[in-house]
Image (cartoon, rainbow, N blue to C red; front, side, top):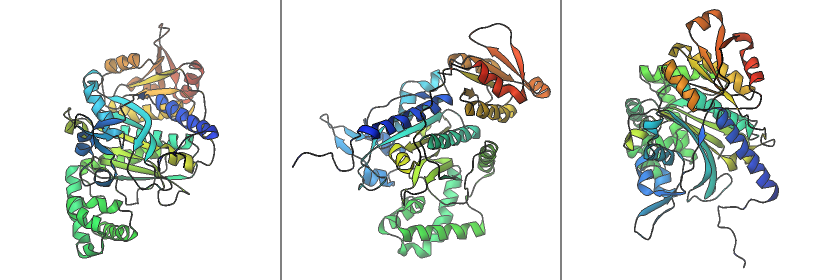
Length: 431
C-alpha cells in the first residue's frame, strides 16, 4: 500500500491552493489596514511556554499537545496555538522596551493531537492578531471589528459573534465560587472529566463537549442570573465591558451577549468572544479571542494589557459561501492623532470610515501626548497625520499634515473627511 498523508493532515492542490491563497491575502491585507505588522514564530517551542500559559487543567495540555524529548532531553512541543509564542517573542526581542504597544499578526500551522473530524485536524492553520501593551477597551473593540472583517473577507456570510466578559481575577474567583455552589447538587451527573474540573477549574465545565454537562452548566448559569446576574463583574470591569459593547454598536457590529461560553485557555480576563458560523455542526466556532492582561507579566515582563484573536483557516473555508476577497492591498495610510483620551471615539469613527474605503488608518488608544503620537505616525510609515483637538471638534474640522511632502497643514470638514483623504491616498498605505 502506498504511503499516505498522516490522518488529520491534508495536501492542498489546484483550486484549493487558490482559495487558501485568497484567504491568506485577505487576512494580511486587513491586518495591515488596521496597523498590524507580521511576525513568524517557530513551529517548535519549549514545553514550559504552554504549560505556564495555558493552564494544566485545559484539555489542550492534558490530552492534545504533541510533546516529545529532543536529542538533548529537552521537552519540546509542536505549537498548539499562537498567542503564547507571540508574547514570548514580544519579550525576547524587547518589544516592550522599544515599542511598548505592539500590534502583531501571524499566519501558519498549529498542531493538536485530537481525534480528526469535520472542522478538527491534527495540523491546522490559524490567522491571528495580538495587540500587546494597552488596557484600553477600545483595543478590544478594534480587535473584534477586525476579526469580523476577516471572517467576512474569507467568504463567511452567515455568522454570529458571542460576546462576554470573564472579569478580573477577583471576579473570576467570585464567579467560580457561585458556579460550584449551583453545580454542587448535580455534580454526580457530570462526566468524569468535569467532576475533576469542578475542583480544579469549574469554568471548564462550560466548555465540555458532552450534552449532559453543557445542560447542567446552562441551568446553573440561569440560576445565577436569576439571583445576582451573570457575568459577575466589579465596577471597573463593568465599565470596561460597557465601553466595549458601546464601541461595537457605534461601529455597526452586531453581537449576542446573552450566551454562556468559556474560552478553552486559562489566560483570558475581561472581554472574550467567539464568532460562530452556520452550517458547521458542533464545531461551529471559526474565530475566537479576548483579553489576557496578565500573560506578559507571568512570562517575566512588565504589567501589560493585551487582546487578540485567532481564526481557523480550514473552518473559515468550510463555512464560506462565496470566494474569499482578493482586493489589492492599499499602499498608504493615515495616523489619527487625538489630543485627549475623550476624543478617541471620534477618531475611531473616522478610522472605520477610512478603512471601509480601503485606506489604512491607525490611532492611539492610551492617551499619549501629541508629540509621542506624531513620532509613532512617522515610525509606522504613514503618509498623513490627522489631528483631532478641542478646536478641531468645535469647528468640526480635522487638521491634516502630509509627512512625505511636508509643507503647510490644512483642514478638512468632518462631513467630507473620509472621502477627501481617500482621494489623496490613492496608491500608498501604512506599512
